[in-house]
Length: 174
Image (cartoon, rainbow, N blue to C red; front, side, top):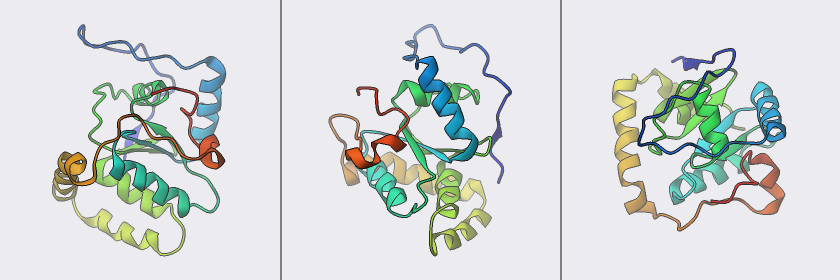
């Protein structure tokens, strides 16, 4: 399954009149992010979701080469990255993987993430053969119940300081 192709450069942000403007990222920070995008998979996740934070920790523990970078969907960094792919819905209902110029959401983001992990985890990539019209509703069902089943944090999660450098939005407060 292919993701959404990137554009050469993001155009102006399109917002609904009732939608607040996203926080902007400094030019220096954005240059670091663009550099990370060229070589590293970037995983965007719901920062207040326990399941999502646990999933990020799962990825960190199985990424011995420390290729993955992360950002919370609530951050200005994530919003600017998504805008570069014309994703402006700002829903926190899906993990998002950006890798090699493509954007993956929902089941495809989770499965492509597993393909990039160490040891036997890439074997689960066989589930990419399951059509999206089957896999995404299962993903959506879990997503709808994630706060009830796993809990919700009062504020966005960030890791301990030894992994802080992998988070593109570590300097933003949430």
